[in-house]
Length: 129
Image (cartoon, rainbow, N blue to C red):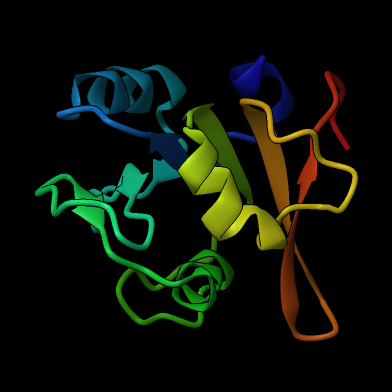
């Protein structure tokens, strides 16, 4: 579905928690030529109080929102989508405030939208929107 509903030139941030990266690399290949979070390699975001993990980025929700919106200078581009493939309850508890209020906190594809200076992640249906 992701390749079907996202334009070739779009940027997709992949989330695959608790992984050493193999799923991230396979899925990055599958969505090519779309851009992804390759510069950060943060396919997993650390929740407060979680033990250190070399494959996770220790970001606050506001830091991740800056990365998604392109305000963070690390990549030079903003993300159009977030693809949550595998996320635990701690991820949703920490970063759930960025998602649309009606989100059921399920894996899926979310469109990145900026409204009134705030990043919101809205579920994408099976059609181009």
